[in-house]
Length: 90
Image (cartoon, rainbow, N blue to C red; front, side, top):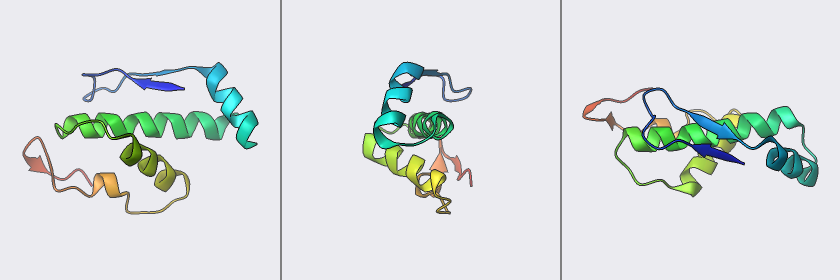
């Protein structure tokens, strides 16, 4: 449904397949706007992981999108202490 372009974490580039998102939204009976937002946030999770020199973790990115969607703050992916040796980004 979405693809984070590896190496673009400072200015994340995300590709979306609207056909796949529409199909998932139909299957889960949710609006296209929710599907697009969730996909973008999930892929932004991968940009955060890369900024921290971490391996991509689909479960962590999915949890990040879920927390964002349902307003569960703080977002655990953003709570980690350092990004490239700098203070946390929250």
